Amino acid sequence: MNVIVVGGGPAGMVASIIAAQNGNAVTLIEHNDRLGRKLLATGNGRCNLTNAILDEEPWEEYARFYPEDLKNNRKTLVKAVMTRFGYADTLRFFKNLGLITRNNGGLIYPYSEQAQAVLDVLLFKIRDLGIKVVTETEVRRIDYKGEKSGFSVMTDKQTFNANRVILATGSKAQPKLGSDGSGYEILKGLGHRINKVIPGLVQLTCKGKYFKSVSGTRIKAHLSLCDDRLKVYEESGQLQFTDYGLSGIVVMNLSNRLRLCKGKVSIVCDFMEDTDRSSLRNIFVNKIQNNPERQSGELMIGILPKKLGDIVLNESGLGYNRKYKDIKDSEVDGIVSLIKEFEVEITGTKTMNEAQISLGGLEVSELTENLESKIVPGLFVAGELLDIHGDCGGYNLQLAISFGAVAGMLGNGGEYDN
Image 1 (cartoon, one colour):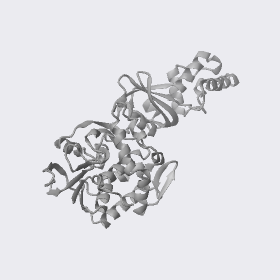
Image 2 (cartoon, one colour):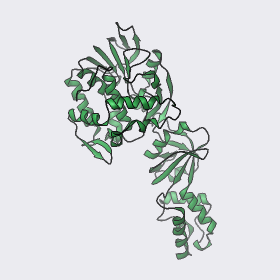
Image 3 (cartoon, helix red, strand yellow):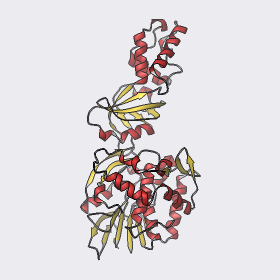
Image 4 (spheres, one colour):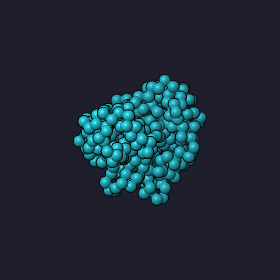
């Protein structure tokens, strides 16, 4: 069969390889001047391929984002796809391409820790299989002409004909790397429903006048995402303050749950997760008793980073010029509360320019477990076009690889020859 793959990211490249290995004539169309631009940026250029957690029942890692999905469409689809091509298959696939990997605390990287190595082995295989690569070409529309006639893929330069089409154009996130959301419009033109697309794995903007003064400060903290003070999700990790709000992997993971919130959204930070309130209070009491003549501006030294400590002192009303011996018990309690429950009101997120992924996309109930459209037979969809996503840590790249591989199988008849 003649197969057109639209999109030269991880999902599209893997789909092309699997389809070609199964004896199909494959043409891969990419609107950038080269394949894999976004892949090179993953993992800060190190390319976190997957996560060892996904070796067992990985679908649980993705389904928990969607409590509104009462029919468990996403869980069912991810389970079906990753049963056919999952974590172990991914490692074998890249090993067969010549890539050596390393496990760094459960995060799987190329041994060289260079994303270029991942892209290179994919490109070598694409070359070896004789896959036709067409770059700098925009797909404007796809027409389905029936089971016998197949598809016409119309671009800004020429029209391609195919028996099967795999659409893997990616999302709107990081447009500087070529993501333009064009796949959503193509799917709409073919009668598909697209759920609202918003930034995901993205920094949060916050209310408060102190962020510029504390910008650049990093601290390990336990963060709780709250909807009208009701905890929605919690996670610990490295928190970074910016001039507009909060950043860091833990914040990006929380950003994926914002759409679960209906009321006032806030993040409650515990800056000393490993110390309970009573122990923390005793630390301050001992400081005060042992150094009664010191100034309150020195109270946070050795406990919090200087800039953050100053914010806590200001927010508590204690200031910098009180003597330790004049600090009241109630003021100590107030400082302890701020360190253990520092609340930040969330006003929104940064834009698609900063987002690592986008949330929303193709309604997954419109695909079969083989990733074939229920509306347009012979059309397969893979990658970030689907309304499925994961946290930081290799989860989204594994989705792209698994879904690309299964789409490349082109239905039940296709296989992965490992």
